Image 1: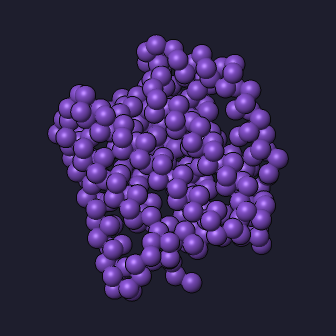
Image 2 (image 1 turned 30 degrees about the horizontal axis):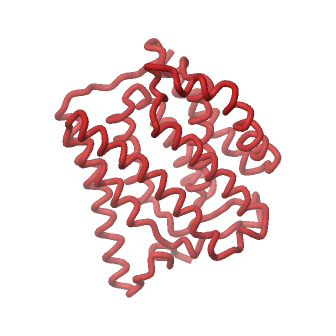
Length: 275
Protein backbone atom coordinates (compact mmCIF):
# COMPACT_ATOMS: atom_id res chain seq x y z
CA UNK A 1 0.00 0.00 0.00
CA UNK A 2 2.78 2.43 0.94
CA UNK A 3 4.75 1.74 -2.24
CA UNK A 4 1.60 2.24 -4.34
CA UNK A 5 0.96 5.57 -2.62
CA UNK A 6 4.47 6.78 -3.48
CA UNK A 7 4.20 5.62 -7.11
CA UNK A 8 0.79 7.25 -7.55
CA UNK A 9 2.15 10.46 -6.06
CA UNK A 10 4.98 10.48 -8.61
CA UNK A 11 2.65 9.80 -11.55
CA UNK A 12 0.15 12.48 -10.50
CA UNK A 13 2.89 15.06 -9.98
CA UNK A 14 4.38 14.33 -13.40
CA UNK A 15 0.94 14.72 -15.01
CA UNK A 16 0.17 17.94 -13.18
CA UNK A 17 3.54 19.40 -14.12
CA UNK A 18 2.68 18.87 -17.78
CA UNK A 19 -0.78 20.39 -17.26
CA UNK A 20 0.62 23.53 -15.65
CA UNK A 21 3.26 23.84 -18.40
CA UNK A 22 0.46 24.03 -20.95
CA UNK A 23 -2.40 25.83 -19.19
CA UNK A 24 -2.25 29.31 -17.66
CA UNK A 25 -5.87 29.11 -16.48
CA UNK A 26 -5.28 25.84 -14.62
CA UNK A 27 -2.15 27.25 -12.99
CA UNK A 28 -3.89 30.40 -11.75
CA UNK A 29 -6.94 28.49 -10.53
CA UNK A 30 -4.89 25.86 -8.71
CA UNK A 31 -2.23 28.08 -7.14
CA UNK A 32 -4.09 31.35 -6.55
CA UNK A 33 -7.82 30.75 -6.20
CA UNK A 34 -7.63 27.37 -4.44
CA UNK A 35 -5.06 28.42 -1.78
CA UNK A 36 -7.16 31.47 -0.85
CA UNK A 37 -10.12 29.18 -0.20
CA UNK A 38 -8.20 26.44 1.58
CA UNK A 39 -6.17 28.77 3.80
CA UNK A 40 -9.22 29.91 5.74
CA UNK A 41 -11.09 26.61 5.72
CA UNK A 42 -8.97 23.46 5.86
CA UNK A 43 -5.32 24.49 6.17
CA UNK A 44 -5.64 26.65 9.28
CA UNK A 45 -7.07 23.67 11.19
CA UNK A 46 -4.87 20.92 9.77
CA UNK A 47 -1.69 22.96 10.07
CA UNK A 48 -2.22 23.67 13.78
CA UNK A 49 -3.26 20.20 14.95
CA UNK A 50 -1.05 19.07 17.85
CA UNK A 51 1.16 16.15 16.91
CA UNK A 52 0.79 16.66 13.17
CA UNK A 53 4.02 16.46 11.15
CA UNK A 54 3.11 19.75 9.42
CA UNK A 55 2.53 21.72 12.61
CA UNK A 56 5.88 23.56 12.37
CA UNK A 57 7.02 27.00 11.23
CA UNK A 58 9.00 25.30 8.46
CA UNK A 59 6.00 23.69 6.78
CA UNK A 60 3.96 26.90 6.88
CA UNK A 61 6.88 28.88 5.43
CA UNK A 62 7.47 26.25 2.75
CA UNK A 63 3.81 26.12 1.76
CA UNK A 64 3.45 29.80 0.99
CA UNK A 65 6.97 30.45 -0.29
CA UNK A 66 6.65 27.77 -2.94
CA UNK A 67 3.15 28.95 -3.93
CA UNK A 68 4.65 32.44 -4.28
CA UNK A 69 7.34 30.93 -6.50
CA UNK A 70 4.74 29.38 -8.82
CA UNK A 71 2.81 32.63 -9.09
CA UNK A 72 5.99 34.62 -9.71
CA UNK A 73 7.13 32.19 -12.41
CA UNK A 74 3.67 32.30 -14.01
CA UNK A 75 3.84 36.09 -14.10
CA UNK A 76 7.22 35.84 -15.82
CA UNK A 77 6.00 33.26 -18.32
CA UNK A 78 2.87 35.08 -19.48
CA UNK A 79 3.69 38.79 -19.15
CA UNK A 80 6.49 41.17 -20.08
CA UNK A 81 7.92 40.64 -16.59
CA UNK A 82 9.71 37.65 -18.08
CA UNK A 83 11.92 40.08 -20.01
CA UNK A 84 12.70 42.21 -16.98
CA UNK A 85 16.36 41.96 -15.96
CA UNK A 86 15.56 42.48 -12.28
CA UNK A 87 12.83 39.82 -12.37
CA UNK A 88 15.39 37.29 -13.58
CA UNK A 89 16.79 37.33 -10.04
CA UNK A 90 13.45 36.19 -8.59
CA UNK A 91 13.94 32.44 -9.33
CA UNK A 92 17.37 32.33 -7.67
CA UNK A 93 16.10 34.40 -4.73
CA UNK A 94 13.08 32.20 -4.02
CA UNK A 95 15.17 29.04 -4.49
CA UNK A 96 17.85 30.31 -2.11
CA UNK A 97 15.17 31.20 0.46
CA UNK A 98 13.65 27.72 0.22
CA UNK A 99 17.03 26.05 0.69
CA UNK A 100 17.91 28.35 3.59
CA UNK A 101 14.62 27.49 5.32
CA UNK A 102 15.69 23.85 5.35
CA UNK A 103 19.26 24.70 6.39
CA UNK A 104 17.92 26.63 9.40
CA UNK A 105 15.64 23.73 10.32
CA UNK A 106 18.53 21.25 10.08
CA UNK A 107 20.68 23.40 12.36
CA UNK A 108 17.73 23.97 14.71
CA UNK A 109 17.10 20.24 15.17
CA UNK A 110 20.83 19.55 15.40
CA UNK A 111 21.15 22.02 18.27
CA UNK A 112 18.03 20.67 19.98
CA UNK A 113 18.47 16.92 19.52
CA UNK A 114 22.10 16.42 18.57
CA UNK A 115 23.32 14.55 15.51
CA UNK A 116 26.29 15.58 13.42
CA UNK A 117 24.34 14.63 10.28
CA UNK A 118 22.17 17.73 10.71
CA UNK A 119 25.21 20.00 10.63
CA UNK A 120 26.80 18.14 7.70
CA UNK A 121 23.63 18.51 5.68
CA UNK A 122 23.11 22.11 6.73
CA UNK A 123 26.59 22.92 5.43
CA UNK A 124 25.76 21.09 2.19
CA UNK A 125 22.71 23.30 1.76
CA UNK A 126 24.87 26.41 2.06
CA UNK A 127 27.12 25.10 -0.73
CA UNK A 128 23.98 24.50 -2.79
CA UNK A 129 23.03 28.17 -2.40
CA UNK A 130 26.41 29.72 -3.17
CA UNK A 131 26.79 27.70 -6.37
CA UNK A 132 23.62 29.13 -7.93
CA UNK A 133 24.62 31.09 -11.01
CA UNK A 134 23.67 32.29 -14.45
CA UNK A 135 20.30 33.84 -13.65
CA UNK A 136 20.95 36.57 -16.23
CA UNK A 137 20.50 33.79 -18.79
CA UNK A 138 17.02 32.78 -17.60
CA UNK A 139 14.51 33.25 -20.40
CA UNK A 140 11.01 32.33 -21.53
CA UNK A 141 10.76 29.93 -24.46
CA UNK A 142 7.96 31.52 -26.47
CA UNK A 143 8.22 28.95 -29.27
CA UNK A 144 6.57 26.11 -27.35
CA UNK A 145 4.84 26.10 -23.96
CA UNK A 146 6.31 29.34 -22.61
CA UNK A 147 8.60 27.33 -20.38
CA UNK A 148 10.93 29.28 -18.13
CA UNK A 149 14.43 27.99 -18.86
CA UNK A 150 17.55 28.28 -16.74
CA UNK A 151 20.42 26.98 -18.94
CA UNK A 152 23.07 27.31 -16.22
CA UNK A 153 21.22 24.89 -13.93
CA UNK A 154 23.42 21.83 -14.46
CA UNK A 155 22.71 18.13 -13.99
CA UNK A 156 25.48 17.93 -11.37
CA UNK A 157 23.90 20.72 -9.31
CA UNK A 158 20.49 19.04 -9.54
CA UNK A 159 21.86 15.66 -8.39
CA UNK A 160 23.72 17.26 -5.48
CA UNK A 161 20.57 19.19 -4.56
CA UNK A 162 18.40 16.06 -4.72
CA UNK A 163 20.72 14.20 -2.33
CA UNK A 164 20.81 17.21 0.02
CA UNK A 165 17.03 17.62 -0.03
CA UNK A 166 16.37 13.92 0.52
CA UNK A 167 18.81 13.97 3.44
CA UNK A 168 16.96 16.95 4.92
CA UNK A 169 13.61 15.14 4.74
CA UNK A 170 15.15 11.91 6.09
CA UNK A 171 16.68 13.74 9.05
CA UNK A 172 13.93 16.23 9.88
CA UNK A 173 10.65 14.67 8.70
CA UNK A 174 11.44 10.94 8.41
CA UNK A 175 7.80 9.97 7.95
CA UNK A 176 7.86 11.91 4.66
CA UNK A 177 11.13 10.46 3.34
CA UNK A 178 9.65 8.01 0.82
CA UNK A 179 7.24 10.64 -0.47
CA UNK A 180 10.17 13.04 -0.73
CA UNK A 181 11.82 10.71 -3.24
CA UNK A 182 8.71 10.88 -5.44
CA UNK A 183 8.53 14.67 -5.19
CA UNK A 184 12.20 15.05 -6.13
CA UNK A 185 11.90 12.65 -9.08
CA UNK A 186 8.79 14.52 -10.26
CA UNK A 187 10.89 17.60 -11.10
CA UNK A 188 14.16 15.85 -11.98
CA UNK A 189 12.64 13.53 -14.59
CA UNK A 190 11.02 16.31 -16.67
CA UNK A 191 14.13 18.48 -16.54
CA UNK A 192 16.36 15.65 -17.77
CA UNK A 193 14.12 13.78 -20.21
CA UNK A 194 11.26 16.09 -21.29
CA UNK A 195 12.58 19.67 -21.46
CA UNK A 196 16.07 20.55 -20.29
CA UNK A 197 16.41 23.74 -18.33
CA UNK A 198 12.95 23.53 -16.75
CA UNK A 199 14.05 22.14 -13.38
CA UNK A 200 13.25 25.26 -11.34
CA UNK A 201 9.82 25.56 -12.97
CA UNK A 202 9.01 21.88 -12.42
CA UNK A 203 10.34 22.04 -8.86
CA UNK A 204 7.98 24.89 -8.03
CA UNK A 205 4.94 23.16 -9.55
CA UNK A 206 5.52 19.75 -7.98
CA UNK A 207 6.65 20.96 -4.55
CA UNK A 208 3.71 23.36 -4.31
CA UNK A 209 1.26 20.57 -5.18
CA UNK A 210 2.90 18.32 -2.56
CA UNK A 211 2.71 20.97 0.17
CA UNK A 212 -0.92 21.71 -0.66
CA UNK A 213 -1.66 17.98 -0.55
CA UNK A 214 0.05 17.71 2.85
CA UNK A 215 -1.99 20.53 4.33
CA UNK A 216 -5.26 19.31 2.81
CA UNK A 217 -4.95 15.59 3.57
CA UNK A 218 -2.35 15.23 6.35
CA UNK A 219 -3.88 11.97 7.58
CA UNK A 220 -2.91 10.24 4.33
CA UNK A 221 0.71 10.88 5.23
CA UNK A 222 0.71 10.95 9.04
CA UNK A 223 -1.26 7.71 9.33
CA UNK A 224 1.13 5.03 10.55
CA UNK A 225 -0.24 2.63 7.95
CA UNK A 226 0.88 4.93 5.14
CA UNK A 227 4.42 5.59 6.35
CA UNK A 228 7.58 4.03 4.91
CA UNK A 229 10.14 4.58 7.64
CA UNK A 230 13.84 4.04 7.03
CA UNK A 231 16.48 3.18 9.60
CA UNK A 232 17.41 5.76 12.22
CA UNK A 233 20.83 4.24 12.85
CA UNK A 234 23.28 7.06 13.65
CA UNK A 235 25.97 5.62 11.40
CA UNK A 236 23.64 5.51 8.40
CA UNK A 237 22.45 9.06 9.04
CA UNK A 238 26.04 10.30 9.34
CA UNK A 239 27.05 8.60 6.09
CA UNK A 240 24.11 10.18 4.24
CA UNK A 241 24.93 13.59 5.72
CA UNK A 242 28.58 13.20 4.72
CA UNK A 243 27.57 12.14 1.18
CA UNK A 244 25.35 15.20 0.88
CA UNK A 245 28.18 17.49 1.98
CA UNK A 246 30.69 15.71 -0.26
CA UNK A 247 28.54 16.08 -3.38
CA UNK A 248 27.64 19.72 -2.80
CA UNK A 249 31.15 20.73 -1.74
CA UNK A 250 32.54 18.79 -4.68
CA UNK A 251 30.31 20.66 -7.09
CA UNK A 252 31.36 23.93 -5.43
CA UNK A 253 35.00 23.11 -6.22
CA UNK A 254 34.10 22.46 -9.87
CA UNK A 255 31.94 25.58 -9.97
CA UNK A 256 34.45 28.04 -8.54
CA UNK A 257 37.33 26.45 -10.45
CA UNK A 258 35.46 27.07 -13.69
CA UNK A 259 34.71 30.64 -12.61
CA UNK A 260 38.42 31.24 -11.96
CA UNK A 261 39.49 29.57 -15.21
CA UNK A 262 37.06 31.62 -17.30
CA UNK A 263 37.62 34.74 -15.20
CA UNK A 264 33.87 34.98 -14.73
CA UNK A 265 33.49 36.36 -11.23
CA UNK A 266 29.93 37.68 -11.57
CA UNK A 267 27.61 34.88 -10.38
CA UNK A 268 24.71 36.29 -12.40
CA UNK A 269 26.61 35.39 -15.57
CA UNK A 270 26.43 31.88 -17.02
CA UNK A 271 29.22 29.60 -15.79
CA UNK A 272 28.22 26.19 -17.11
CA UNK A 273 25.73 26.77 -19.94
CA UNK A 274 26.74 25.59 -23.40
CA UNK A 275 25.11 27.36 -26.36
